[in-house]
Length: 167
Image (tube, rainbow, N blue to C red; front, side):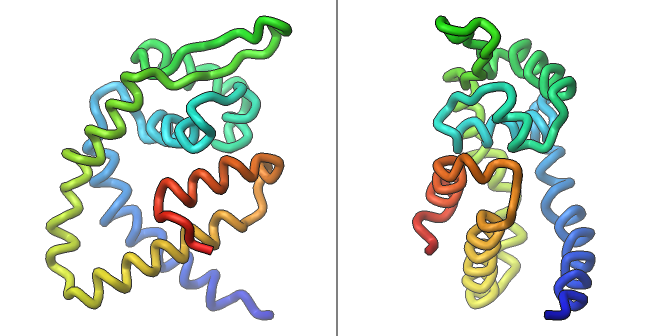
């Protein structure tokens, strides 16, 4: 199969996504919370609210050094706690706090509504097509190979929390 057309479509979509969705989204985040921090919080939510540092690093495609710095910032913002395994002190789990859950809920309800004018500018058919397209993307992306294939529960939670059961 020739993937050239799909590759070209990716390269066409990425700048559009960046300028119309990612950049406005990034500007909404509270001061001190980066896009990567928000992604870590969402990943932890999909993983049931707690993961080891290694699991989180794999999911976010970060090196452990970078993940340690990221977790330090999340701890400073009181968005996560470090939990040491009582049977093996070398295992550190990262657990979401109630503050992180409250932040993401508030963000969805209030701040992410900035996308509403974009959606309202579309026809009903375009909105339905966009929703269907996003559901399909989420479903397909959940099947892409990653270092996290040994965590199907996180993939399933991600899909279910975002769009309900898609398959």
